Length: 96
Ligand SMILES: [Zn+2]
Image (cartoon, rainbow, N blue to C red; front, side, top):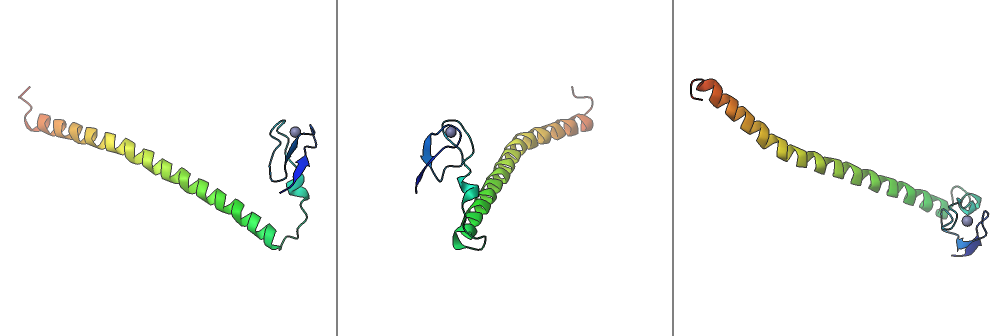
């Protein structure tokens, strides 16, 4: 891991940083990296990125299902109660 200079502000940062922590400029190091497309490093970097994307998607879907179940667990008993009250009312319309 090497230290490189930010092209915008001159701040010293890790060559693995995506953006400069001081000015936020994207480091062009990543683009300039010149390993061939089919090299081990390029493939591993691509795989890691795809893996991160997959994990984020799965976490998003999991969270969505969790919230959906949470809402349903509140709504279903209420719906059951409403149906029960309606049923009682329709069977015994004179007992108010
Ligand atoms: Zn900078």
